[in-house]
Length: 461
Ligand SMILES: *Cc1c(COP(=O)(O)O)cnc(C)c1O
Image (cartoon, rainbow, N blue to C red; front, side):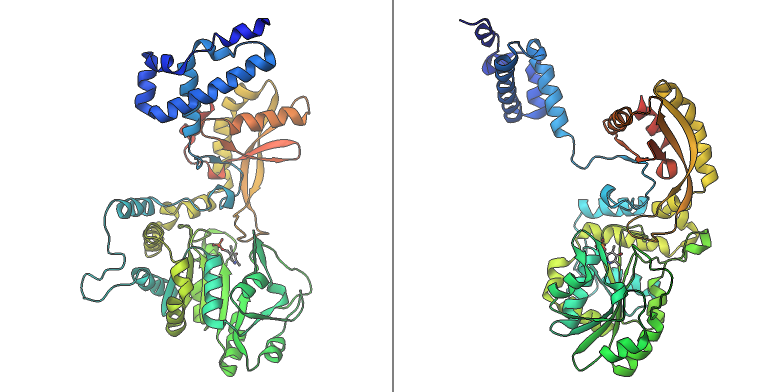
């Protein structure tokens, strides 16, 4: 018998372990099935350990603690809260807009109780789920009607499928946008069964280009907001008002994929201007689509506002049923939109706007307040400083405009990339992971989105 063969006999039997008092609490908390499955996995690992290393695993004398550690870590949600210190406020990979307290409250209510989702309290008629929101959206944008779906990509698909299936849609070559992922205007056109008619060139498109392209078979003239890039220099685009004049003359509706869109004028807070759906409606655009979780600051949703008869066609299209929003989305969106009815308190109550409007001096002051704690914790290996930086709005909004901010920066004293990576990893492994950005051989923690300072400092310890 080789020496390590005897090691196998030191491994416990599962049924014996389960009779041990230390396992009672575990069974109560996680249930018999999970505990037994974990023990089986651990036995496999222990046997493998003996086979390859000829020793027992270090936890062989305390299986209960090991089971607990493993089960706790496997029960950690895949949707873990993090500190977003990337400097990108609407970070798609981190879930975009944070919801307002009003939206959170509204979602909780509709999760807990039956609600009048498609039920009209005052008539015998069956209500329709976008109804309450449609009247709010009409009030805020001046549109005649509205439709809500899962996201703006769905809104664009539905708009095209319902209004231009089997027909032509004229779009400028300067606006054949790829949003990221698989969302590209030409592909969406194909999926919606429309024929894309490209006009103009990458940098310049004139009204006469649209006029020449429009014909018998043209269902829509379409504008796509070039939200995630900018063409600069010798450029020309036709704005919505001009295109609407042509559309009226030819009796062809103009529709716009606005992407982000903002229901308020951001320049009043010194932020870069973003087109507003209400401006396009006022300019006579027939349908405007935009996202719920970009600058609007609400839940993931796609919103289409516009002319009554076109919205009616959209509402009746079979794809609407497939793309409709659920009650939680509708509740969060309604609560978010209600905040816009009271614009004086918007900055305070809408997290997206609150974070976007934080000024650099306040953020720098916060960074200086936190600096000593970071210097004492990381000062041996890193030079920790407060430095100015530029935040981004994110999600393709206003791509070239940056917001002045402040960051804690960590420069490895040994100049090594591996030292920096281990810091990034250890912050990512905190109980609430801290996500920053690496630039210029340093880690940057942009504090623009840090609101709960005490939770952040506690998490560090
Ligand atoms: C972001 C964006 C979309 C996609 O919106 P989602 O809500 O992310 O689906 C479509 N078009 C434009 C112009 C956008 O900026």
